Amino acid sequence: MALQLNLLHEEILEQRQRQRDPLKIGMLVLAGCGAILFLYYAWNAYRTLEIKTRLSHVTADWKKIEPEVTKAQKRATELTNIINATRVLDDYIDNRFFWGPFLEKLSRCVPPNAQLTNLEGVVLDEDKGGGISVTIDGSTAAREPRSAAEDLRQMLLEQLGKTYFDVKVEFKTLEDMETVANVGGTNVPMSHFTLGITFNSSKSKPAATPAPTRAKKRSSDENS
Amino acid sequence: MKIPNLSSDQIKKLVLSAMGFVFLLYVYFTFFLGPLQKSRDTTLARIDEMQKKIDGSKGEMSKAGNLERQAKDATARFASLKALIPDGAPIAWFPPRMKTFFAADQIDKASARLESNTSFKQAELSSWSKYNWIIELPQADFVALGKSIADLENAEPLLSITKLSVHVVTTDSQFQQVGIAATTVIEKR
Image 1: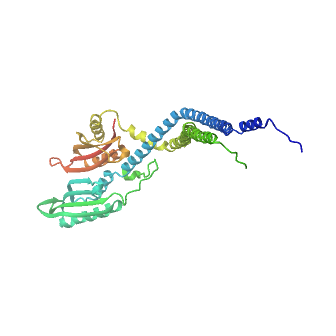
Image 2: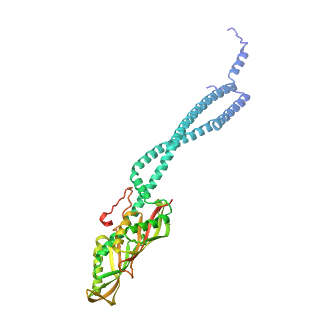
Image 3: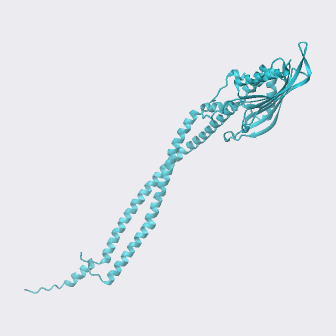
């Protein structure tokens, strides 16, 4: 067998070693990774820019409608306030006590042999239970003046009970007077009385309604 | 896989390269990709917020439109109530108005004076005030008075009589002396 001598062995080995240089390979890998990372960054930057463009569009849209929205919100608040104020005002108006019908009823209850000299009526505060309190001073002249006063009390109780609720008519005082009245040429004794009347104008408080229109309308005959 | 025999110099270079790579990754994620991601998240959050505002505003505008239609009656009624109140200080117009009103029913010498002025407890009526008046009618016929009070209560929905006192005039039994405590609701101006 013939002996072969490779004189370039060392040179080839050196060349191979240069090719397999880990630093070189590392640098190549690093460059590759760097390129990938750069591309990834560029992609992310592009997406970010795209999102920022979207934001500027959305902001422009918002700026366009913002004045209208502010106006609408202001108007809505104003309308809500008007609706609420009207509702409360209507409640106030509807819950008033009407003295006209009461005075009419009272005048119809007083017989010819009785005279009212003083009337004090007051609408009690809601905090104190509400209702109406009336004090009437007067005198009656009849054979039985106390009985005439009692008739007046009964009449008031009956007539007021037709319209109002929880009606109470009570004597605070009822006393004979020393003076006599001349009725139809006859002298008849007199009595002086003080009546305390309490009642409620409505059975129960009406529930607050959200409707803006007047919830309750009083009949014309009640007010006239 | 055949691991090439590495010299100590090569191993040193390799370790240094690995360390450099790790450092590069750290710098990349912390100083490049991190802020970018953060900026993107912030922008997305702002878009989301803005979009919600826009969507909400559409609802708000339609709500205002609906409310406008629903509030027609209330607005008209509110305007009619406001129209009952003349311009100017109540003390300037209320007493003459009462005097004229009762005079029309043959109840002369009516006078009205302001007793107090309070605000409403209800938040809805924060722009309205209660004016408490004392109306005095020194000479009134009972029938005329009843009619006049009924007319007053119907004509002035914002007026409420809280107290009424009627006394016989000793000098003339035909007439009564009347005191009325009334509260009017008046818008603050």
